[in-house]
Length: 539
Image (tube, rainbow, N blue to C red; front, side):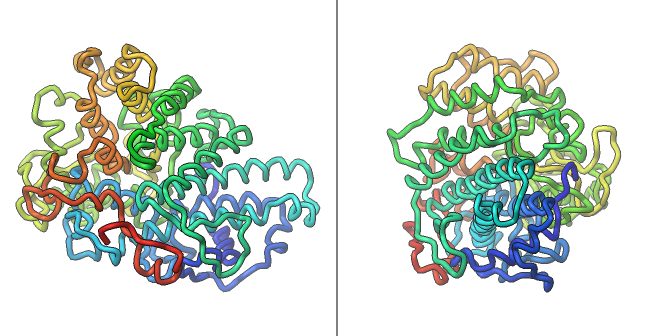
């Protein structure tokens, strides 16, 4: 959805930072290279340039959905949100991918990956490229650079806000690298332009940098104002707080047992809950083609823009919605896409389905979008897309039932962060000793349930609010939103054999996996280019 335009030609920025990251091999896909001063001679160029940094979350290249500005990566594989979905959801109990012959898929969904997996490279490369883009924007917008171009005071004030947004977008990419890989090449705008190998930075230093950056720019960011259509999709104070809440909640994973920050997590969650955000009355409005205008914009703290005309890509909600379509059912039109979708791409694993079907309680839960008719809950053959339940959470239809602007590329924005997650984090931080109030935490959970059930029939008591309850409730509320792997790790359920889901570790019944799978390996091609990068244990 295009509430502010993501300028394709802003990817000319790539040409200015083509060799900023030594661990990447990027290729400029546009022949018309402009010098920086020429590009920024127009004051509007600063808006276009920051839009280019945002666009990296949605787009993969300059020449349409099939192009990639990172050499060696398939355009779909290298799309930012598709990469997150692969690593955070496909590697867990929530989803299965039918076509295991697609490069890298089998290893990811059976938890048997290596440092040569292309899906892992896609995430590492795209996130690192995001850092390069943000760094170059910051280089081109220093006080000295603005002075040399005679930029007026009004534009300077706007650029200062853009700079704060770029720093948050950079912190977001470093957060993903910290969470998924535990290490990253470290470069900022203060490093020289050119083929520079970033020094390696590990989780403790990454954590400190991300926290410091987010706290430093908070007062320079836009205020939280979900009703302002002109700023929809931009980083504001709420986005910075949300990333802080995430790193605080997972601090013991990142920094080691005993280094908890649950009190800080609860404090930030409380600030977000008491801000201008609010739950949309209809849960599924968060995942429709008009989720920028149907009320969901009040709940979505940070959307990644999908537009069927202007941000065409084979990731984001396009692959999710097209992938939800059943092979035998050919039910794509009910989701606002082509009848056959992407050939029965996705189904859910039995353990996820059981969160909804093991009891009649969830029959009237709006979050329960399972299609079970004429299907078995068990997937005996991954290649048989007639087995396993389907999910229809995301849709390319609007709240009035109209299809999106394109039957292939969807208009539905991806809700990377939502207020509902903040409610759940508050409850968890409280249970883990972060302070707050049990009655308040229980009330937040019941707010979510009343929204989904339409009444109080599924409300819980304070005694029922436990960590075991929360890990399941987080999946019911947030499935397919790129949180599950992180959650399972934090709850001690991802590795080992305490919790085995279908095809975990390989076999249909699942098996224990070793501790090293809590982190993904640094891609071998990235290590070959940047010799400063180490490798995670076990790879």
